[in-house]
Image (tube, rainbow, N blue to C red):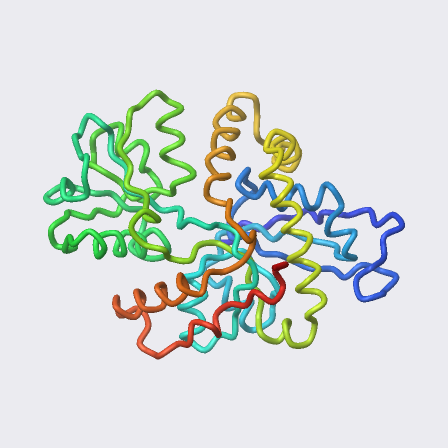
Length: 321
């Protein structure tokens, strides 16, 4: 089931030079992989402040939790998407020529959360406990397996239960002892609601590649100026968000009309948490070692069986050095 945005975001071009010297802007769709959310603030800032328009690009944001997102990018039905590095590895292993061109999240946003009263103070305290997880696939599951591997716990030593996206309720109502969570969501909700928590953040144990901007080899080969334009505009939006999160939040609120005063406080806290996951120098650049580690780990899990050269999965050619 797809949740697709119906509204095209129009950009006033003013006197800006259009992309590639054209008099009309180049229309580009960027698949977001999720519903409108404050976590997309850098994208909203780049649009609102005309950074895409300045590059001669007119952007349509395609929202929706699509399972075939990288299939569409790999077959050039879409030119750009936001997706995680592990998904790029899996897609490339299946013959899809996708490539990661901008690193957005410098930390893999998966964590294992428990209420402090449970006394789960170290990873070893999870042995024999019931842990909830949304689904046994995707980034959360890969993150969970990576965490167990790094701390030396066998999956059989923990009672893993699929609970859907009910982590907060499952923890508060004591249905599970701990839960695999999205680091920028459930932990923030719990803390804002006054609960003391313990959390093990995956990036403290391993360095899997997280979310970034994805395109495909054909677009890079045939239209590198477009890739450069999109990455440059987004990077400026990211820089602005890091520099002035209050202004970025105000812009995000306009892009998310359903955000009311009741939820705004929580969402501002979510954005604040995001900043720590986005910071890094040079901004937007991929770490070759992290890609090599990610490929090796997915192969260890048996999720890929072919030999992949990590350098075929990403490029830093569009990132200012």
